[in-house]
Length: 117
Image 1 (tube, rainbow, N blue to C red):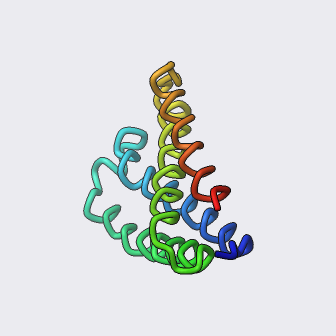
Image 2: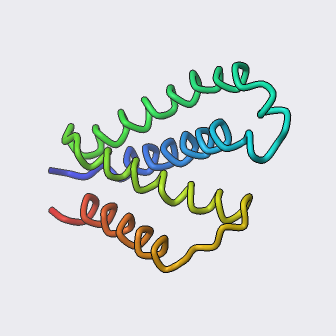
Image 3: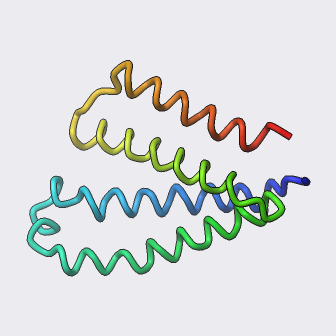
């Protein structure tokens, strides 16, 4: 298997953008009253967010020569990091030992998928 770094990078960037969008779509109701009052309108953000997830999946699957599992773990782990940042930044929820261990495991997941040949 030959890893295609350019596609992997594009895929990871797309996953990060999509997870940021999903974070705001789902948790924006606790940050801004407007979103809380307009859930139907905010749900329409699911269309472009899903499109970005589709491209993230495409790029990372192709980057790994069409092996499916690496993209799933990379997508999952990137979502964990975005969620940890969002809850810390917006809700002042610190990264405790349990969360730090989970983030470390997410990093290990990405490392295994990218570097284990």
